[in-house]
Amino acid sequence: MKRSALVLILAAGALARLGALGMPGTRDVPDWKATSFVASSDFTRIYGAGGSPPDERVLLWEQIKVKTEYPPVSQLEMALVGRVYRLIDPEFSDGRTLTALIKAPGLIAEVALAWLLLTWGRRTFGAAAEWAAAAYWINPATWLTGSVLGYLDAQMAVPATLALLAAASARPGLAGALAGIAVLTKPQAIFILPVVGMMLLRRDSRAQARDAVRAIVAGFVVATLAVLPFLLAGTWPSMLRAFARFGEHDLVSGTATNMWWALTWAAGSVARLPELGWIDALSRPATMVRISVAVAAGIPNPRLVGTILTAGAIAWGAWRSRQGLDAERGTLVAAWSVLAYFILSGQVHENHAFLALPLLAFAAGANAGLRPWYWAISAAYALNVYLFYGLGMTSPPWIDRRWTFVDMTVLLAIFYCVLFVGLTFKVARATRVRT
Image (cartoon, rainbow, N blue to C red; front, side):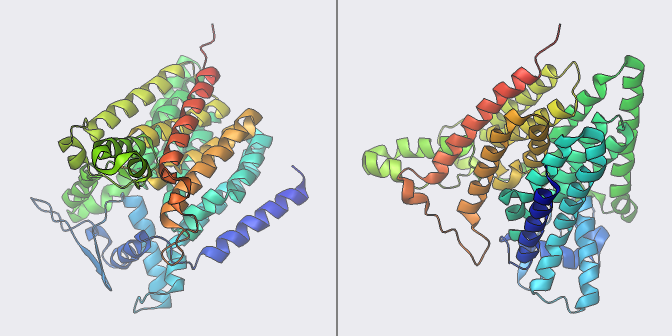
């Protein structure tokens, strides 16, 4: 890539991000402000005071009341943001500065990813890393997620991506540490762990065992340091209770345009066909459906079915990778694994496919044939987020889902599924067992 083109891409991406930091973001941003407010002064009790049964703390700030379920690393980031903001405004009042600071950790993570890909990555992996840095940085889906809407995914996706690249470059300890940081920031990073393991299998058996031990020990050290403050404070039961709430969400799909979004809309349309007729049944809007309602209507439990399908897909990917993975194929399989979770699992939200973007960017940098897939999946992701949340609380989407007669989000869910199936064939070819 020409230096002038790279400089232009970096400048454009930086301006887009910096210009959006003060925007209000999604309805989750006030919740993270409340988290930052409490964590900055009472970090070890952010989940609750412990006890049996465990206390479940309600975080209070201005008019916000919320419980947090995020792992300790993300809570530490929010605590640091809060400490900085208290120096600026001891009253901790709301405003654009606080909004920008809440989004700052994600921006710092993205800058770190671009810088590392263009320095260490370019020296280690060549032009693939440079293309990945540029493609990720200029991708509207990435700055829409972080700087515009304020999701926390970049803080997880960056160390997860770097963990895979560290494994590919024979740095197992660093890979384990980065993977631990990613999982303890947002749990969706768990889907890269089998791939990290497969990437460490590229070497001889003695090196494999040594590398596995180093990676596991490094991950264990990170996990221990992350939970140690809560263990020492005796509030760990509340932390575990917070984590358990992840599995109790009662939504089939939390505005994720995946398989379940299309299936629940289709089931609802068929059920109401005698009442509405064909035209109204097909044009009815898709809405979020509760798992309990779906089960009561005779649909197999989406939580159980989705878990089985996702586990089966991840197992298939690991089996296909049994001869080991290099950086290109490893990031491809990891991106596919994230999409398998997004498409097949229940209780998924619209932003849970984000981790696939930096992973697929690197794979596409190494293999030009994957670049159309990277941009198509990025477009599907961005449209999914935009159709529901626009550019934030004060900027609803300009696109009307009714323009396509059949709800546009349903059509997008079908398109997403088609992309996933197509990428599955790409993974199958890339991991063909060599004899």
